[in-house]
Amino acid sequence: MQYQNSLAFAKQQDKEDSLSHLRNQFHIPKDKNGKDWLYFTGNSLGLQPKTTKKYINQELEDWENLGVEGHFEAKNPWLNYHELLTDKMAKIVGAKPIEVCVMNTLTTNLHLLMVSFYRPTKTKYKIVIESDAFPSDRYAVESQLQFHGFSKEDIIEWKPQKGEELLKIEDLEKIISEQGDKIALLLIGGVNYYTGQYLNLKRIAEIGHTKNCVVGIDLAHGAGNIQPNLHDSNVDFAAWCTYKYLNSGPGSLAGIFVHEKHAKNKNLPRFAGWWNHNKETRFNMRQPFDVMKGAEGWQLSNPPILSMAAIKASLDLFDEVGMGALRKKSEKLTGYFEFLINEIGADAIKIITPKNSEERGCQLSIQVKNADKSLHKKLTENNIITDWREPDVIRCAPTPMYNSFEDVFNMVSVLKTLL
Ligand SMILES: *Cc1c(COP(=O)(O)O)cnc(C)c1O
Figure 1 (cartoon, helix red, strand yellow):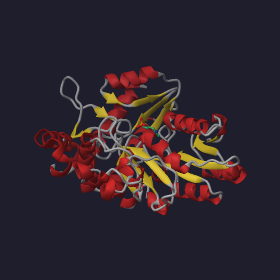
Figure 2 (cartoon, rainbow, N blue to C red):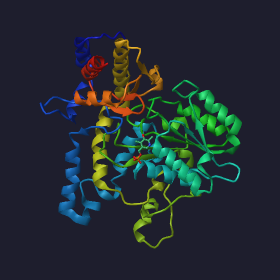
Figure 3 (tube, rainbow, N blue to C red):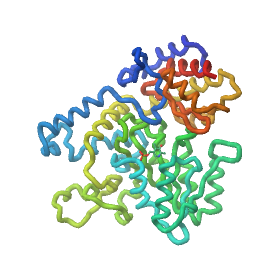
Figure 4 (cartoon, helix red, strand yellow):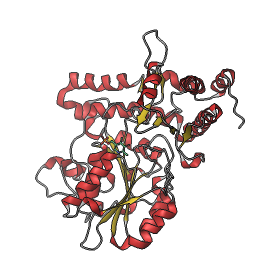
């Protein structure tokens, strides 16, 4: 499509946008004059849907009125509350319901999944991560290696080539063909948090599986952003948080995916608690442990319902709109953002995110040569909320749920004057 660099064009796009009404379903933070912030950090903490309070209040009231009976008698009985989230979450990541469960938090889930899927031997024990992996994922992997008696030197980094920012699939192929016999696990960010690059999950799974390496994906920056088709991609497992693009509130519970091919494998070593024990006999309390099939078989505890209520509010909204429509708007919105940044025409600015919309989500990572954090501070003073990554990158994520073309236009206008 043909973009234009004018406020009138941006406003016209918003008018024609069939999802523009969604913005009204969110609380947009405002400055002291009541003007909406330009909020571009849905990749860090998504905004609050206006329905969230109602969903949480329902559970508070049921607790108030029913006490323990709420497990069975609440409007949405707590005992099986997580099941209300499964189908909608599965649709968001392109999985079958048996493959998905909402539980714990992201890094915790990565560990629980590695208990089952990182099974090193004396000769096959190394782990591949991206060189720009999110710190928590790197620490998790280092500690798993050390826990099994190996060292953090046993990480193999998939790196961009010299002078480049993005990962090339050929380089992963090379790592696996040369060292695959020593590699037990690949744990890769499906959408890289720093560059915004969306990797080809199916290809990564194929490459890893040629040498019998297990393939796990961190989808923190993918869930609710891109359409990862986890089932078809054939990755072994995945995990993601719900407080970024899934707008479920700070520190809210996370999701896991375990591919159907592992669903009935009761021999996978794993940690246990009463919540991954067979539902039918869970409360007999005397039975030997009988693990549930599917992703539910990795739960440990009865979950925090208040957090799940916030997730339910958000997933109901996603379900109403559909990822297909969101993604379509997202490509257009980020395309417009990219067009406007390029229009500034400053040599100092470089977008490091891939140009091809199939290789990115909504985020653009903008490198500003010789800039320092004062640029980010000035943006914030102009009510533009972005994320700064040292040494010189601004990460901006216009989300299709609540950002407008006008937001994008106004943001770039300010950035231009600041430069
Ligand atoms: C946000 C993010 C995390 C955060 O982990 P928590 O356990 O939720 O604190 C981890 N990994 C990646 C890739 C992330 O983007």
